[in-house]
Image (cartoon, rainbow, N blue to C red; front, top):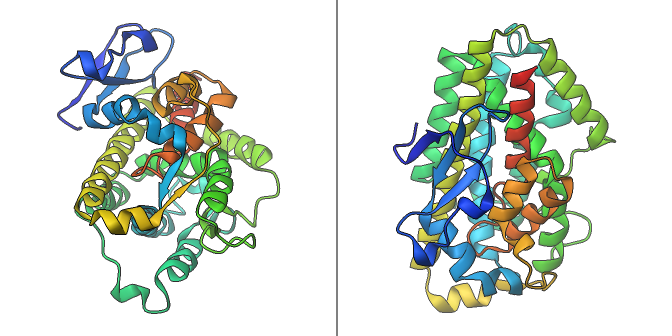
Length: 316
């Protein structure tokens, strides 16, 4: 577990998260074990600072295409690893009920998206970043040593994609001026699923069929938090890459989509807290707000809501 992560038993209230301009450390509260259980709080001071200090960027809706592309590449490597391990463990009793390759798998869609952005020679133009490697290595380790923990990675990724991902698709399509036919955003299109709501209900019912004891469920929820931390690290890494790109290149690739109107509810971290608490409207606001951050376009669409869902499953 990340050294900057700690379990606390304080109330998970947004007002307890200090403004970054007035504190040396800032916490994003993410409740993953509700109703008196421990609360995981993740220290990501730099990201939280950007939420407040660069609030005008959020409200203007700046989206940088070059950094968006890096996010797609990170997703490609992440899902390649996840789906390799899912295939290896598709008959494992602790995962088999959640095996839905035709409905959920994203590798082929991401391959088409990368080819759209990078061209037919894309394989020679992309590479797995250091932070993404850590994520990929974790997925492989889990798949090889403790396959039941794949439940955490599969649930948070796929259910998040089905929830906030559809909003991300619409915003990116408009802001990046991508073709209305969906090229570049096939990752968000689940052609084998006609009703996201119905499928999520099916997936959760299958999770309830897993015969796991309470300690194993705790491990699954903890692994979901670990996956979230790994995503944070990828997020921060792309932020650093953005700072190294010449200003003129970034300026040329920044697009604007002004759908936000200066409301704290549009801050992704406040929206995240509300989404984790069960507010469906905030799950959408979270997706839109994160997409508008110059370095967070494709991450965390509905992760917080997915974590809350895992917590509910844990308590059953």
